[in-house]
Image (cartoon, rainbow, N blue to C red):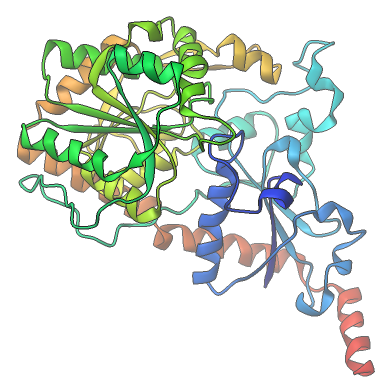
Length: 459
C-alpha cells in the first residue's frame, strides 16, 4: 500500500517538515507526523508527502503507477482549519483536541471572526474526512458526542530509551557525553529575571545545565522537569511555578526544577517569554509572575538533539505537569518511558495513563476555559480542569517523601505503562489493523486498473 501524507499547510513549503519553529501554533503536528513516518518505515509502508493535496483534480493525477489497483490513503497531520483533502482518496485526519466541546457555527456568536472560514466549524471540517485518528480516549469521546463517527484512538508512538533506566539507588548523572549545544537559561531569582527581561540572555553551552543537575543530586536534592510551549493557554504555568517555589521555601531548599521552554530564539525569544508570555499565562490562573523569586527553578530554551533530550529525561526524578487539558502530552510520556515519575492530574489525555500506580496524581477541578481560549475558538461553553498551587505543593511533598522501594515501583510502572500502550510494538498492530480494514473496504478501482493496463500496453 502507498500511503500519502500531508502536514501543516502551505507554510510547510517554506519551512519543510521538521524545521518548523518551536512554539508556533500547531508545530506539534510536525512532531507527531515524524513519529508516524518512523513507524511506517519500520512497517515497510511506502509513504509519499503531498504538501498541497488540494491542487490535484483527482488522486489519479498524483501518480497511478505507484498506487496499485486500489484507491490511496491520504493521512493528514493538521489542525481542523488546515484540512486539505486529496480528492477521491480515503482521507484520514490525525487530530488533537483537548476541550469538552468542538467549535461549530451553531455555538459561535453570530458575528464572531471565526465564522468567515467554513473550516473553523470543526464539526463540519471533521465531517469531510473518511476517518479520524486521535491520541486519547477523551478526544474520541468528545468527537463521538458531537455526532462524528469512525473515530479511532491511535496515539503517536513513543520511542523507548536505548540506555538502561537507572535504579532508585543509582542517582548519578552521566556527564561523559558533554552537551555542546548552546541554550539560554535563566534562574528564576528575581534579579536574574529582571536582567533577562531587559536583555535577552546570551546562549551558553548546555553542559552547564547538567553540572547544575549534578550539584543538586550531590546535595541530596531531587530534580524535577517540565516541558511546555509558553504560548499555549492550556499549560497553566502559574500553579507549577508557584507550587514549586513554595515547596522549596518551606521544605527542601536543595530540590531543583528545570523548565524546558519551547521557543526557537528567532521567531520568539526567551526575553519575549519573560516579559510578556509567562506574565500573561500566570495572570490567567490568578497568580502574578512578579512574585517569582526562586533560584531553585531554571528556565531553559533552545534546540536540543534527541540524544540530549534523552539525557535530560534520564537526569530527572519527577515530571511536573499542571496542564488544564492535553491531547496526548508527548513530553510526559517520553519522560515516563525513561522511568521519570509524573506529578500530574489524571484528566483529559492523562486519564488514559496517569494512575496512582505510576504517578503522584494531582486533584483537579472542572472549570470554564479561560476567556482568551474561549474567544480564540468561539467556544464559550467549553470546560477543562485546573490544579491549584496548594495541590501542586502537596503533590511535590508526596513525591519527595517516597522511600526508595515505592519510588522504584512507580518508575517501573511508568515504563511498563508506556511500553504496553504507546511503544511502537503497541501502536503497530493498531495501525496495521486499520489499514487492512481500509484496504478491504476500498477494494479495487477499475479505472486505475484500466489505466495500468493501458500504460503496460504502451510500454
